[in-house]
Image 1 (tube, helix red, strand yellow):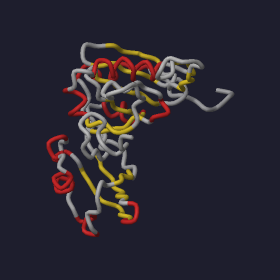
Image 2 (cartoon, one colour):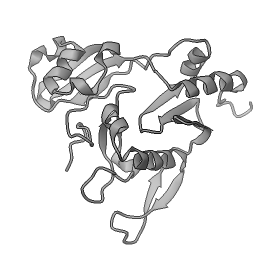
Image 3 (tube, helix red, strand yellow):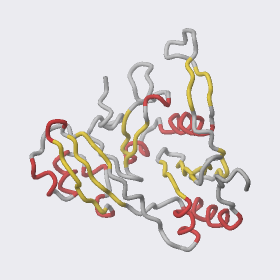
Image 4 (cartoon, helix red, strand yellow):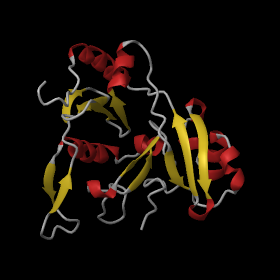
Length: 227
C-alpha cells in the first residue's frame, strides 16, 4: 500500500506546503490516475510533479467533479455492485478561465482555485479581501504534522526548510526560498515532525482579476437564522 506521506506520483517524501504540495484523502474516492491498477487516490502530491504529469487533465476532471458534487454514487473499483457513496464538497463553479477555475462554498466563506494542470489553493474571505486591495495573501499559520521517512535525530528541529528538503532528497520539487518555515515539535517514536510554513498565495492572474471584481458585491455567509 502506498505511503500517504509520499508523493503519489514520484514516490518521494512530500511534506505539505500550501501551493507546493497538498494531499487528497482516500475517503474522497478519487480515482488514482497514476496507480498501476484501479485504486482510489490517498496521499500527498508534489504540485511540481502534478503540473508536469501527462495525466493531470484526468486528475483535474475527477477533482473538480468531487468539488461540485454532494452525495453521489460512483462505481466500485471493479465495477461490481453495490456502488459506493462519495461525499463531495458541494461547491459551485463561479469562474472558468483558460488557466484555472474558481469554486465557492455554499455554506461558508470559502473558495478553491484549481489550476487546469492540477494544483489548487484554498481561500478565505480575508484572502480575497487582500487580493482586492492589491495585496498578495499569505497562507495560514496552522501547525502541520508530517511523518518523516526516517529518524533525522533531535537536531531536525534546528534544520532550515531548504536543509530539510535536501536531506529528504526533494529540494528540486519545492520553492523553499518563498517559504517561512518554523519547526514546532518532533516526536521521535512516531517520526512525527510538526511545523508551521507560510507562503504567499500566488494565484493565476485571471483568478486574481475575477475575485477582485467578484468580492465587490459579495455578501458574507450569515449564520443568523433571522438574517
